[in-house]
Every structure is written in structure tokens, then in C-alpha cells.
Image 1 (tube, each protein chain N blue to C red):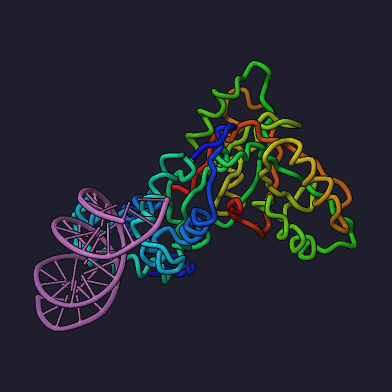
Image 2: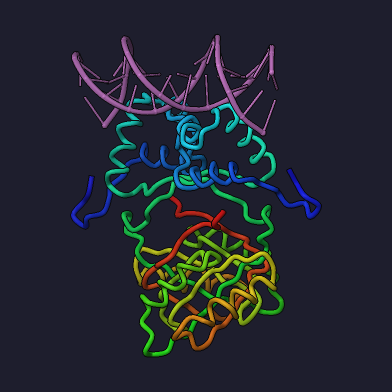
Length: 156
Length: 156
DNA sequence: AATGAAAGTGAAGCACT
DNA sequence: AGTGCTTCACTTTCATT
């Protein structure tokens, strides 16, 4: 299952199974089985191995936030004071539900986050009343995403 | 189902159902039913409405790319020549499998993308041989994510 | 690794409230 | 909107190859 680099080796059948389930996590295993021409039990076995290997880290329903009024997505680059450790800042950022991603990055900023807000005013409040209030946050740079044009997982 | 702003109205039961399925898309509806104390048929009915409303935009198996050797994630800000239209650039970016997200942003750049590569050399090749080769791309700025510390969906 | 069969469980539709 | 019931399909396990 793993090669010398500790990486998973998956074959064409595994890939086909995963491609179906990455598109639709609730697709019946038997339907996939009929599609690719092996038994349901075989797929079941393979999925258990893939889960054990850590390649499959779960499944999710995907929500469309626009329908709930969340229309303003932005990336915010955050500069931290030298005294402020990254882990402490992340701990604070975790408490802010509008923060969907947080990356410890090279380059200009210490941290790059993705936030999702209802509108520009909501974004402004998150910035001023939540993010800027975090101790050690000195300055931020905001980039509003006018349109997310690609959103996908890795191709396998 | 929709209020005057054309937004979906969901109640506490909807939220509970969605929270279960956002965690695990394959969780049996009957199990959720037992958990929250209503019949499976009721949940079935609610899910159909939520799907029809567009709030649920699908379900996905989530893959852990690290296990396949993809360990280098980066954000790249792209400057486009005035002559280059955004849609044409996006069309080219779509062809690059390493590009997972693409945002049309305000601020410094025209476009902000997220890429996932196996290592720094792979990232360098994607930059030099794919992204920089796109007509109209004048300059790029790369921010490597040393660690993605938060990754989640909106809280409902 | 894959198969087919068996037992248990769930999905989906319907009539009724 | 929700319930209970029914039918059919799917999941899961196991002995076998």
C-alpha cells in the first residue's frame, strides 16, 4: 500500500472509485461497482484500505453560502508584531467564525486568512472589531474576491 | 422558504441536519433522525427542500493530498497586462490541474490563485512553465503556505 | 484481491393527519 | 410539516476462490 517514500500507491480502480465519490459522496457503492465492472464487496474493501491509509479524510456536504446571504469573500494578509507568536494568533482566529482558512505564509505577511462575510459592512466589522483587536496584530491588507472562478480539489 | 430578500430561511432542525451532514456526508438519514428525534421521512422532505433551494450544492469525499506527496501549497498573486481580459486568463488557468482556486480580486493583483504542488521544484515548474507562459501575465508574487492551520466551511 | 450470498439497515415514496 | 408503513436498494460481513 505504501512505497519506500511512505506515500500511498493507488491503482486505476482506486482512482475511478475516488473520482466518483469526490463528485458525490453519497453515490451508492453498488452503482459505482456496476459502473466500473467489479463487485460491491471489492469496492468496499478498497475503500477501507484507502481510509486506513489516510488518503480519504472524510466526506462533506457542501453548502452554498450565497443563499444564506454571505456574498463577500476576502483574503486578509496579517502582519504580526515580533512578540506575537503565530500559534497564539491562530488560536484567536479560530474563535472568529467568519475565518474559513488560515495559512502561515512566507513573504510579506505572517498570516494569510480567508474570510466570508455577508457584505462589506460585515467584513469591516470583522476587520475592525475582531481581527484588529487581536493582540499582536499590527497591520492588515485586504483583498476582496469579486468572483471565485475556480474551486476544486486535486485531480487524481 | 425564502424571505423578502430572496434568502433562504432555515430553522433549528434544518441546521441540525446540515451540521451532521457537513461533518459526514454519508451519515444515514435515519441515524440523524434518531439523533434529533423526528422521523426519517421528515428529514427526507427537508433535505429535498434544502436541495431545491440551492443551499446544498453537493457532497464531496475529501482527499488528503499530503498522502499522495502534495506538500507544497502556495498563493500566487498575478498581474495581468491591461490588454488581457480576466476571463481569458481564467480559461488558461483552468487547464492547469495544480490550480485549485482562482479569485478575481480587488487590490494589488488582478487574480489570486491557490496552487498545490508536490514540492518547491514542482511549484517552480508550474510558475515558470505554466503560469508565466500564459499570454498577458506580466508578473507574479508567490506566498508559500508553510502550514494550513484552519480549513472549514461556514458555521450554520 | 475479488466474488456471491445472506442478514441487517437504510432510502424513498405514499397515504394520512 | 410530520408520521408510519411499505418496497426496494444498498451496506456490510464472511466463506470461498
